[in-house]
Each structure stands twice: as C-alpha cells, then as structure tokens.
Image 1: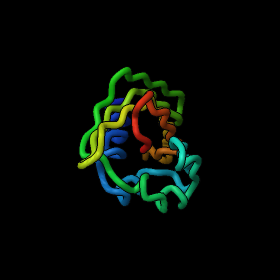
Image 2: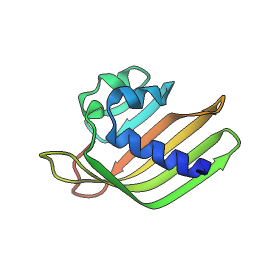
Image 3: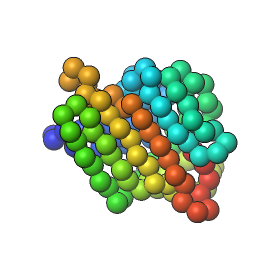
Length: 120
C-alpha cells in the first residue's frame, strides 16, 4: 500500500469510525474548522463538540487531490456522507497530516459545505 493509499484510508476512518479512533489518529494541538455553528476547534475542544463526535454511516470521496512534501501531506476532496436519519451531506474538505516517527497524524481538517448541505 502506498503512502497516499494509507492517508486516504485513514481519512475515510475519520468519517466512519468512532471518536476514540479519530482521536488516536489526531495530533494533540490539531485545528479543525467546521461550518457554522461549530466553527474553529483546537485540541481537546474537538472531541467535546457533539456534531464532531457523531460518525457517518458512509462517505465517498471524489475530486481527490493530494500533495506530500517530506513529513507533511495534504488531502483535498469532495465528500458525500450519509448518517442515519439525516439528509446527505456534501462538502469540499481538506486535511493535513504530519508524519510523526512513522505515524501519520491529522493536524488540520476543514469543511466547506456545498449549497444546501447540512453542517457536519
């Protein structure tokens, strides 16, 4: 599996696995930017936000783009996600990862919902 394959698989897990799994793959001082009303979250505040802690039943990525320079990788994509009992969610997203001694940790995530989508 290539590094890019690993990063994309990790990104999918962030959407679909539990908050504990996502927390284990996230750098301590990470910054997440979600649509209003959630806003900008950093560190432990990320995991206290109810909307962030809820996982999606499924997610599909399209318009994928990735870039890597040494120990930093950036993923950009369009997400189409489904959660039980809620309308679908579509957003353009970016995530940045830091390779910390062989482990890729998410250090930043941002979502820009597409028109008519519901926030995270």
